[in-house]
Image (cartoon, rainbow, N blue to C red):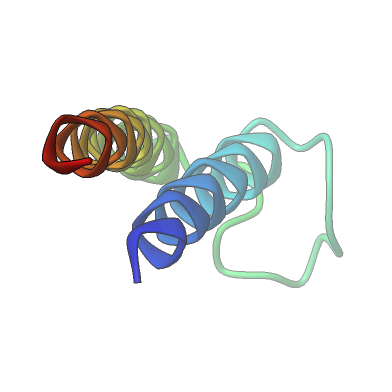
Amino acid sequence: MKILVEIIGAMLILAGLIFTAQSKSLLGPSSSFMYSNPSWTINGSMFIIAGIIVLILGIIFRISFRHKLRDKK
């Protein structure tokens, strides 16, 4: 369960990178609605920031859970 949070964070970061690359005309077909669209730069940045936050929270949860298990023994 805890690794799932980290995977979701990594997927959000990857999606944000793809959105940003498409909005800057670096990736994807020119027929895409995201291609050369500056609003998707902002959306991609928000996805990246959200992904970083979720990833950090997942790491914190995993570390704190390990400490709780070790303290119980």
